[in-house]
Length: 103
Image (cartoon, rainbow, N blue to C red; front, side, top):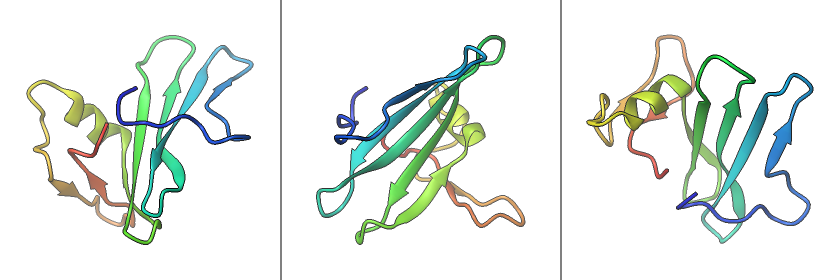
């Protein structure tokens, strides 16, 4: 996928589960040049579509934001339902979801 780097040596890039579902792990280059998880994609065995969670890091390489599957799906529509740069924090949540993150 564009925007992602190869999995670092010894790290997972894909997992296949007993029920036929799978998960893909995408890595990005975080500040300081270190590869960190940038996206998790859960592919169910059948039925629903993939669930995508994106992660963003601050200038120190710390996890700064996570984009939920609902916001990722909205951002992937054409035209996007959630404008690029929009930030949504659900009530009671400590996770910030940002639309327009690098995909």
